[in-house]
Image (cartoon, rainbow, N blue to C red):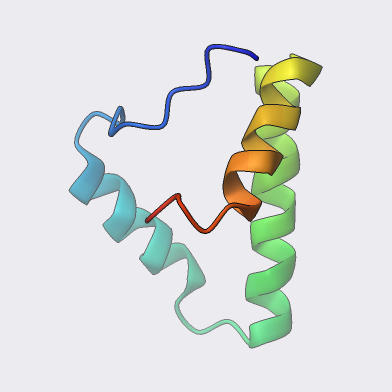
Length: 67
């Protein structure tokens, strides 16, 4: 298992959340879905570690993780 961080770890998280919502404003569901897919792939590439990415997929699919 990797050292996947599941506790709050984003600096100025409220600002990030507002920015994330703002970038979706005015987009259709399909455009928002495509934006999310691009963001996921960009961040996955930045992370790079297959172990971390596999753990993140497992954590995201678990109902124990809350947002």
